[in-house]
Amino acid sequence: MGEQPVAARRSFVAGASLIAMGVAAGLGLTRPAPAVAADTPSVLVLGDSLSAEYGLARGSGWVTLLERRLASQGDRYAVVNASISGETTAGGRSRIADLLARHRPRIVIVELGANDALRGLELGRTERNLREIAQLARRAGARVLLLGMMVPPNYGRQYSDQFAAIYQRVARTEKAALVPFFLDGVSERIDLFQSDRLHPTAQAQPMLLDNVWPALSPLL
Image (tube, rainbow, N blue to C red; front, top):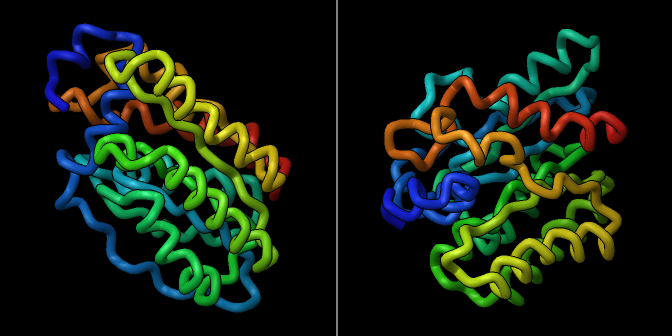
């Protein structure tokens, strides 16, 4: 995905950023998170480069900001960032069982799906993977929060609508909380993206956290 469609469709800058991550962020892998102490409740974030601090100074991404907010409010939670740049729902599905066993999270935040669209994967497969991730998390005793994604309009209105609807269906059938569009309020502002016009800047990270917080706080 090049820069021209992003600039031409200002309101869908974020959508383009989402589906371009598999190409643009392949080198931004996160290190495996250490296991959380058994007596400490945890929040597990399973995402792609939007959550893996791609192009940002370490400690400036929304996941780290979440950890700080929880601490400032006296919430005794460890935040485990298991995000990997370029991750797909299949990749998340293949890793979730081990992550659940290792960290025993109380809450799982799933920020995946955009790279599936980039690779042209069947929407049904994306939905099945998200559904299975949510089911495994729930069986392990965790509450689930899905962060919804969108794709730009050049994919066609029907495809865009069907893609967005995946998150609605999975949240409804798997009793998961939902943020309809993770980049709401950011996607309209090209100044909140890095020079590649694909990844949000440090300035945008508090806004991303603010999008997540209203759906997350009731789960804590």
